[in-house]
Image (cartoon, rainbow, N blue to C red):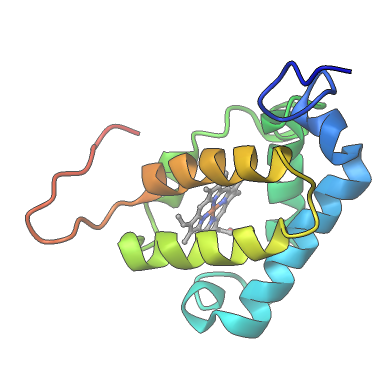
Length: 140
Ligand code: HEM
């Protein structure tokens, strides 16, 4: 079959990756890496990160084209606004991406490359501490 979408053959990235089980695995791999390897990110999270994991799972489910679990349970994500309490500069966004990219290692191409680009765009959008001389958006 021809590949007709940038993420592969399935109608949505959610189906292409393998549905809820696969999304859950990416989230758990990501947070396991944050726990093990990234003290600066881990320090931003509550001691018990089970709710953080659940929220990211719910959000990614809808973001990938599957069930919109986050919106159903919690309303509009307003993600940039929800990240404003945290000090996120370029180094923190790069560190988040490093963990997420490692969590995506088992995802087949072209989906993996597609997701890396889309996560990168979102991570850049969360930056709220500008590098000296750089202007970042202030809208939420
Ligand atoms: C750029 C670096 C990022 C950092 C340092 C960061 C950090 C955080 C922190 C500390 C929380 C709070 C967790 C909690 O209250 O339990 C959070 C929540 C969340 N993050 Fe991020 N994040 C980043 C990027 C992203 C990206 C790119 C996405 C989505 C693609 C994302 C999705 C979420 C979601 C859905 C929540 C839950 C929001 C809520 O309902 O409170 N984050 N993030």
